[in-house]
Length: 276
Image 1 (cartoon, helix red, strand yellow):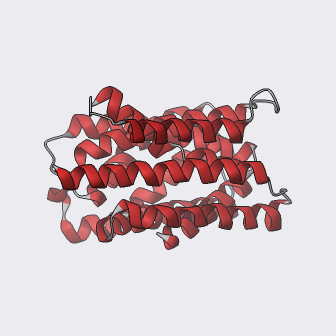
Image 2: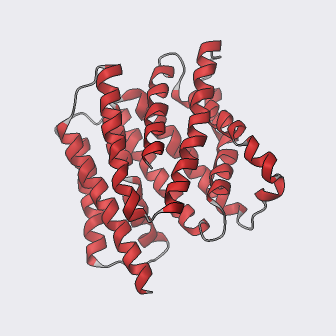
């Protein structure tokens, strides 16, 4: 989990650097392309038959959510302080928990509902509407987290039938054509050095998603989700040292509330699962 957090922070730093000359939506396309290339050894080893699934429609739906979520978060990474993006991104599991209740009609007790509401309050603390301008970058971060929450809801329904690697790979395969169409409206050809950075982003994305899937396969969510706060520490250090960003204590406070609510929701799901 810590390894995946380090990788994601490195990815976001490279996105910030690349966005100085390449539009974030073009970066999404190249990130997806190179991530698929990074998965080729896995496909060669297991052959294409491993892609067989009875839930192609759900994978396509997850691809739509992933595309919109990635576009939003990549735009936010290029536009606002990295710590703000991380803090808001913590809300995706909270939004997903709300989506599971509303869409999948799961029963919810007051403690879980209180945790979800606390997560929403944490997002408001980070955004501080009325006390700071709600910039397009902040809006994109929230919208991206909402879309990734939709992706998490679909993953929840797929996790009982398909392997994590297949779920991740199908997401990239469905995101690729959509990201290419969007990128055409903002297209610019990267230079050789920029192309190398984009390739590294794609490879790191594949490694980060694999590490995350392994973390959840080795340990329960309640054990590893608290470690996700290391992402806030790493990204704050990166922002201060590489991009001269200031430390936003209020954003840290909001992030702690959001992540705390996420951990509690995961805990309640684990307890509920044991009692069934």
